[in-house]
Image (tube, rainbow, N blue to C red; front, side):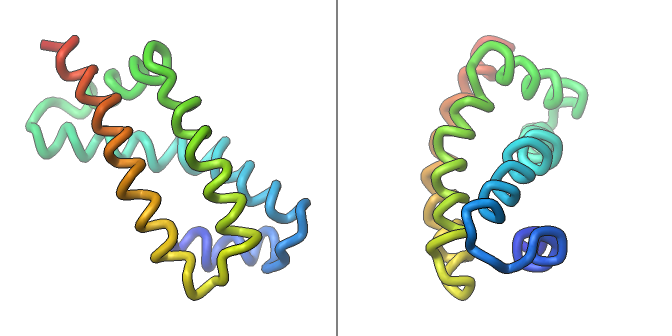
Length: 120
């Protein structure tokens, strides 16, 4: 949440105008999530299950290409982040994101577990 609460206000301001919300959501969906958040999730899984990081990244790219990972991510997180940056008060953003993240992790787990079965 450091990025959203500290960096985004510097880059985009604290406004909740449509333009500001679109800028924040676009930055998150096009840069932060596909280049940082999702790869880190796959690398973490590789570390936990003790397979090479290269394989973790390979599974990430496979899920992007073959399982529609990014489209599924966007279908959940674009509306959520739009609400986060426009409607949800700043002091409730962390609990709001935590609740949504719980359900997203269930979806991500089902997507990535399919990769585990095909990799075996």
